[in-house]
Image 1 (spheres, rainbow, N blue to C red):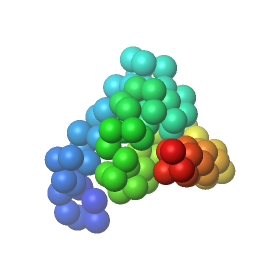
Image 2: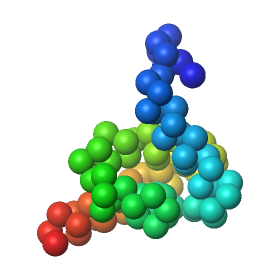
Image 3: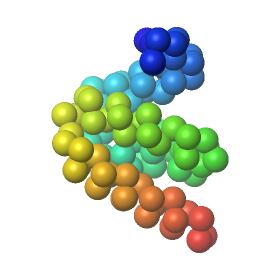
Image 4: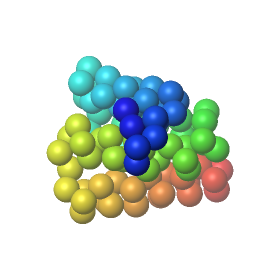
Length: 88
């Protein structure tokens, strides 16, 4: 896959594949389903989640046919999760 004429990093391609797999085979419907329940990224890879979240949200929007409004709501919900984890 290319982004702006450049090859996408393999890590990004893998992340998009993970999103596809969890949507297709594990009933992911929300960003929190992916980041908390399916992959544990919120707890075990939190530093990288800040960079990965836009990619995750884009992929979820594509696969689940979200509107931009739904994507924004999911982003806000994930920000709440991130804040909650930071407090504890």
